[in-house]
Length: 200
Ligand code: FES
Ligand code: FES
Image (tube, rainbow, N blue to C red; front, side):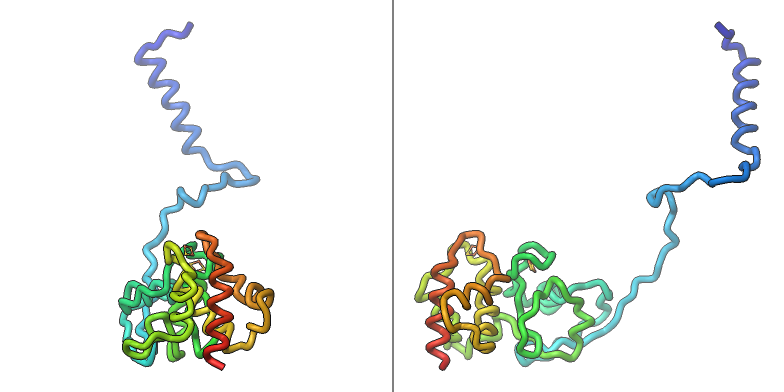
């Protein structure tokens, strides 16, 4: 059993220090894990952009390049109609129209929509008069909690415009990107079919 004398401790400490300071032998170098690397402070990429939403121009200043259209709408333009369900393109709660085509606002960057015409659920009604799709959703009781409803309605508007409402199966197929956790699908399909007849 070695004696833990001051002399021994100093000797072993000195040996360890010598090992640390010794030059690395040739061969593979130790790998430093990413979390151990101190990142140099990177300047954030920010830009100013103009979103045209529901016919109104919204000038957004100092928007980081990584900001999604959904976050820009909800947090910068104050339009909270488009909902954040999954935030990764799976549920469709964030569906809006860009130049008339439906897109998932959580999957596109705000800077990519600069200058395009965006329509959200807030832009459908004309004053007190609801859009036929909105009326049909109410008449058919096509929602429960309502979290998916703005996305369902925007998708239905485009689905009708695209002409994909020839049958119940066709509506189900072309509305399949919009999920409803409350399982209101039969009522949603009925509402879309009703609205398609109303706008013809
Ligand atoms: S929040 Fe965008 S698809 Fe779910
Ligand atoms: S009404 Fe609740 S998720 Fe569709």
